[in-house]
Length: 425
Ligand code: CTP
Picture 1 (cartoon, rainbow, N blue to C red):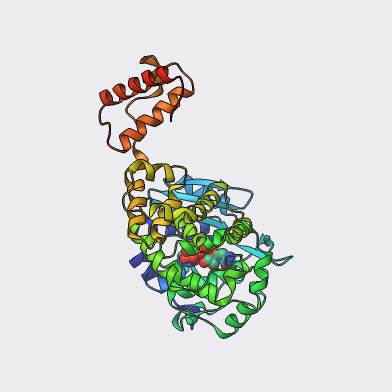
Picture 2: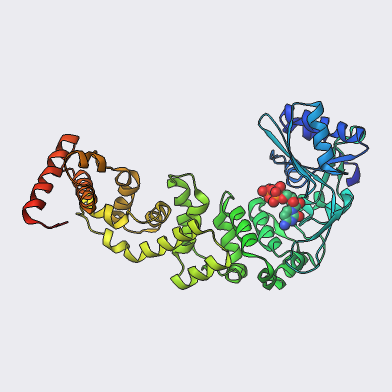
């Protein structure tokens, strides 16, 4: 009797009161327009698992843009409308709600984006990836909280199964291969038998997916609590190799990803994980991977830097290094590449030097600027740059501390240069 399950109690219990009231109000407003409103997707799954997220997706059997406009007229909610896509983003205080029109999707070609047409809530459910993500909750006042579950998602949740909705699912959209394993590992579920078989059969269909879409799914994986579990599983299945990320399933990644979470200084865990993934690739493989993912320029450079630094890491494995020596070895590398190398390095000396650069040396600046040097009588030109570099070196190595020290040093360099008529730096 799954059709009669009512989740009004869970909505009230788990959602913040203001948010629950807002979705109730939108439901009432939809009714006034003669439309039915539903809560859909991951939040329904998570409510049933008693670990709700506040990532609210609503679907209306009608026009989402008209409904969103109407809501802004009767409440303090604000809306951003995307007329072309028939979607809207509503926000009130800290809460954000995505609102879409129910749609029917058909795939003209494997891997292409689907052709979209207006549809019913059932159409909208049947276009989805897995049964556990294919449930809706009615938000109409007359049957508020009623679960709509034509694909038996609740049963699959109870049996802890990831199940696709039809045999062509992975061919239509092979990103579902990556998504299936992400949910499997996040929830500790298993792939239902036929889903497992079709997933393995359809791995080659990943070739039909654009780099941007593959990258987006990889980013979602890297945002998971323990992405290494997902990646190790994908690697064992042969999925990573298919997207030009030929990692060996290993303890190394588990250990280093754990360390990345512990040590992460920048809060940018996802790009840092990407650099760690690159760390185990050859340069040639890395280039293939960057091309396959259509990696944005800045991140691509951080991955290249990681490999370049890996090749020079032995230079930092000397116990007695001057601070300036460390600085000049590292100054041109992306900080993410340096962080990744610190995490990957097995030498405590190298780790210490990389950390010193990240925590301290990269922020060191000379007290004097180029303008200050001009005021001291050093004519604008390459000489100013040379002296600034000399000042920085002295400051890094503790030979100067104050502005005064630097002025003296700058003038002595100037005098010496005037005497010899050449640069020694
Ligand atoms: N969806 C889908 N196929 C995709 C992407 C999304 O069917 N390739 C559907 C699923 O029903 C999913 C919903 O769109 O639940 C929202 O997508 P997303 O935000 O990626 O998933 P959530 O389940 O909301 O969030 P998360 O995966 O992080 O829990």
